[in-house]
Amino acid sequence: MNFALIMFLLLVVTGTVWLLDYLFFAKRRAADQREPWWVEYPKSFFPVILVVFLLRSFLVEPFKIPSGSMLPTLLVGDFILVNKYTYGIRLPVVNVKIVDVNQPQRGEVMVFRYPVNPSLDYIKRVVGLPGDQVVYRNKRLTINGSEVEVKRAGEFNYVEGGLSFVSTQRFDENLGGHPHAILVQPDVPSVHLSGVGNFPNRENCAYNDEGFSCKVPPGHYFMMGDNRDSSSDSRYWGFVPEQNIVGKAFLIWWNFDELKRIGRIIE
Image 1 (tube, rainbow, N blue to C red):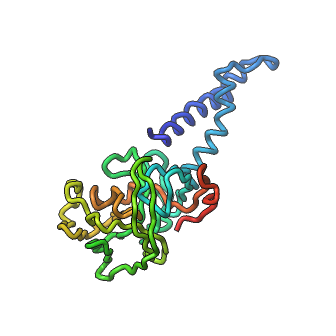
Image 2: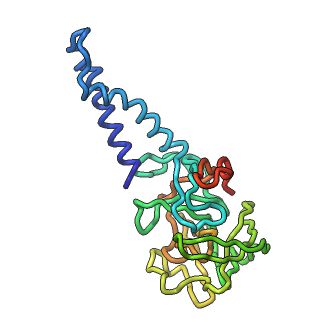
């Protein structure tokens, strides 16, 4: 469901009724005559819809985390806020950038439109910038020839899908000045070759049983989940084009199950 499009259509309808009433209908009503319902309700909702539309289009937009691909940084059920202007001001609905502000940086957590189905929003961590050579072999990440340092930080266990118990190793990683934790399952391959699709610029990547190497094309980004072995990301469906960017995730504002997470900054 394209919520932005629905909001835009509601804004157009209620705004049109408000304008027509201001220009024509109100002048023809008697001073003591009540507004008809089809005028009263749109006029009441129009300012509310306008404020919400402007806020979520240009300032911040709320999202709910539906999966564990970003564990342990983001939990299933986290409600987060996404900064809509830090990567540039974009026209609502069509998502066309009209003002440049900043470019995504390596290590930031970004929301974007899923390249395979742009009606879906995905959230992952920026691993590769345009022009980067990203290599991930034997669970070790290398960018432009430099291996990203990690430090063992114990175990992390969680339940997946309500039934499956998953035991992982937790590591501390610092990517582009953004310290965060990642999860790794030693017995799981670095990439499931059977799941790799035939995505645009697929020729920029080379896969084998140990992992992969990808050259990020201009205007694109390589994304990976912090839960490295339980994430559908750029390894499988390819690069994220610049026009698919939605914004930068920066705050957890609610979680019904873990209230202590409220107000936590997303690193």
